[in-house]
Amino acid sequence: MSKHGANKLTAHDLFADYLARDHVKNAFADYTDAPAAVCGTTIHDPAIQQFLVLCEAGAPMPSFPQMNATWRILEDMEIEVIAGASAEVTAREAAARLKAIYTTEERSLYGGSVVA
Image 1 (cartoon, rainbow, N blue to C red):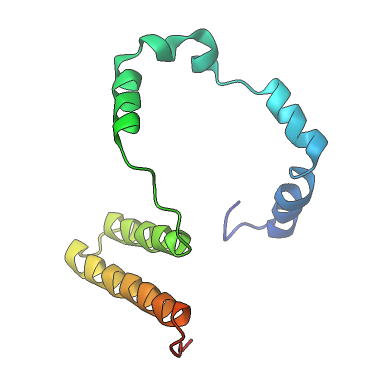
Image 2 (image 1 turned 90 degrees about the vertical axis):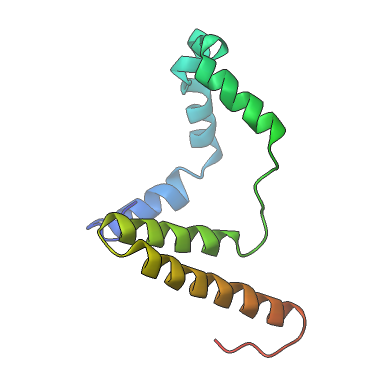
């Protein structure tokens, strides 16, 4: 769904209403396969095997409340740099935004005043 799409209402209804229905989700699950996995190619692919070894050795991704905001800030930063913005300036701005999110969250968790 595109933020600037012409059919936002239709797309919202599609995702929030229709695709969230149990019979639709079940149909997708019943009739959607991952062709590479079904054919067994992942078992013999050295790149997949290396990835699985790394996954088993790695730590799980954090899932604290600020994680979604963190990913959005990093996403914005990546887009800006790809578009030609200074990586150093963009990283400093992202760091300031991240610091503000975590500082605000900590203050609200521990009873301090939070300025919106």
